[in-house]
Image (tube, rainbow, N blue to C red; front, side, top):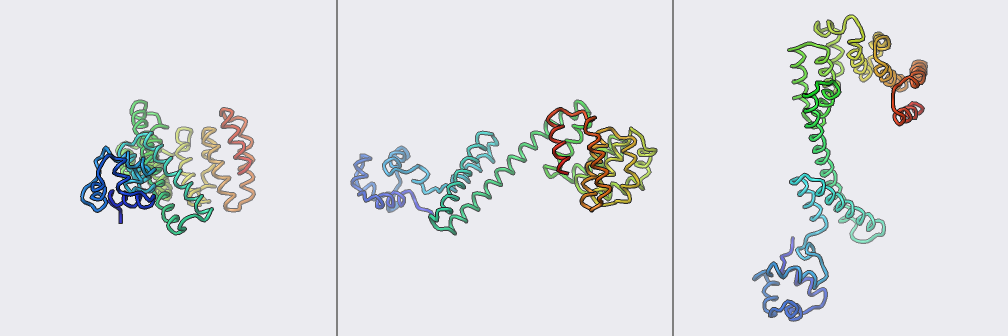
Length: 316
């Protein structure tokens, strides 16, 4: 049960062996006023609170009986309302500081262990909540910018990023229906690629393969295999890898290898190497990795990406 301000003053006064008269003299009041506060018949004037806190050597938060956890929760709540970088930093610093203090107490055997563990869980829960809020806010800002760029330029990278950001924000059904509707109304390579992307992100890999094999509009766009539809074949092969359809992979992988861009080929080979390694298909894995290695010099990457990719390839 939380203390009233008067009860807190009484507790602080007694803990420091200070009389009502001494506190009254410091505040230029009569002792009866202090007595009334302590029994609940009135509260100090707001202007006196900083002086009372200074007198007892406590913060205003402590004077009001607010714990460090209460302050952390309030800061997280403030960020929820203001959504600004300054509020986020202040809340994160408070949470991190309190968690470090609790860890130190636990390591040194100071305080009630159960209470400290409970407070630590509360603080960690608030930290997760804060990070999720910031992540949502960052994703929303990125989406707003991507929507504008996709609308202005119509370029595929922005249109694909737009789908990814909508799913990050939990708008799965909305973006799937939007992409499906666009493809059904206007079955073109770009609308099909966006629909496949939405299905892939949402885990509908079997649907992608089924569409490629049975839907006339999709078959028409992907037949015969060519440079113009190699990226669509790449998406289908990614779906097959995700669900372990090895027969489909072996049947169609040469389509991408024959018609795809260097990036299409490299990305597919990388996923195939991971797939073969996971399935203990040693010969296929070795062949895929060897081909990746041979492609590295011809990939047009900057020095940093090339070095990072080379290091990852060695670890593959």
